[in-house]
Image (tube, rainbow over all chains, first blue to last red; front, side, top):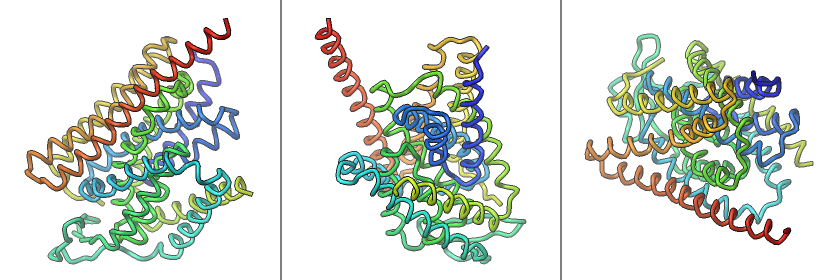
Amino acid sequence: MPDHSTWTFALTGAATGLIGSMLGLGGGVFLVPLLTLALGVPIRAAIAASLVSVIATASASATVSLNRGLVNMRLGLALEVATSVGGLAGGLTAVLLSQRQLFAAFALTLAVMGVLMATRSGRRNIIADPDLDPGRLGGRLEEDGVLYVYRVKRLGVGLVSSLVAGAISGLLGVGGGIIKVPILNTFCGIPIRVAAGTSAFMIGVTAAASSFIYWSRGDVVVPLTAAVALGALPASLLGARLAARVQARYLKIIMAVVLVAVAVRMGAQAL
Amino acid sequence: MSAAPSPLDRVVEAVLTAGVFLSGCLLLAGLLLERPPLLRAGILLLLATPVARVVVVTIGLLRQRDWLFALVSLWILAVLMSGIYLAAHVGRASSRELARITERER
């Protein structure tokens, strides 16, 4: 039978997968600190395990979002272009920033997003006029039997933030959902559920791009990674279904709390 | 809250479900039976799932004659493939380096 550390890793993966899948994140932003700080896993092994777990969480929760029509595939593809370029650029420019500067910049961005999210949690991005043209990248969605339309605003902001998210992803072992979901929701006019679904659709690919390199370098510690990913899989299927029962307003408040909490931790690490 | 999923949504959902379910079974069996090869297979299958998803989306968009987004999807596939190529290269390079180091230590 597996020993108790296997269960600890599986439970850790389950917890981060559950919260991540509710918000369209991969959970890596919680998983890396938990593995390194609380469980004493070396940083490279933690990043590698996190990338695999992000793929597990994103793939599992994307099945639920696709089934509910909450993935805006064309918007996701457009942003993936920026993310993939960012991923490559991140690898090249990583040497220019110290870990401390990186954490400080990351913490500041997340804190601002958290405050914006909390203050705008009551605002809706959807328009109850089904005849309105959603534009090339916008879409429609149904809530309580009413058909709503949303349009994509400030695509440039979305593209630039995806570029940054991609660059951070390979460096920190996260999917980048924690940057994309709030930006898509607060700046680009995407309803929170579609932002989460589209993010889940994208971040599996973002994480996959760098995970093969970690695999071939031998950074993937197999039993650890397997336990974390196995815990994340069922928890993510559950979390994505659970999110459908939570009101959009409360999803945004949960997201704001998560953003501020991660910002405080990152900020503490930068000091 | 939902909208009707498109046929392509359905296909991608099926691909992701298959990847998630199969790798989950491999990981569970590998952990319970303590078989590392099953664990490695499960992890690699998980890594391959997003790649399969990009391939399926690219084919779907080509069949819809949506050339612009098919091109976008091909670009993403190219980036993923270059990541895999780089990984194979880095892997070979680091194992060569390892062989050199072990030889020197002897």
